[in-house]
Image (cartoon, rainbow, N blue to C red; front, side, top):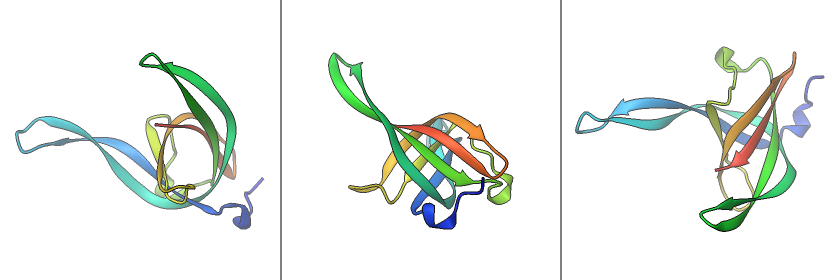
Length: 112
């Protein structure tokens, strides 16, 4: 089912990892922006994880985008999202799952 335009209230930028050379000729990983897209973002399930001996809270998000996307782009788990309109300011999310349907793409994403 095609996501209704009114439900796509958030702005997200899909980013892909690229390798560039720094001033010393060393390869450095950077992130290149794809076009900013309209999306629906909803918190799915809060969880906790152990990191560096501390318990940290983490929330999974389901991000819905229209499909097909501009310039034939298909998101994968190698991408990440920058959620520009997140409460409290921009937030970077790692894409951990992708479900492509005929008219939409749903991404499972976690805070980085």
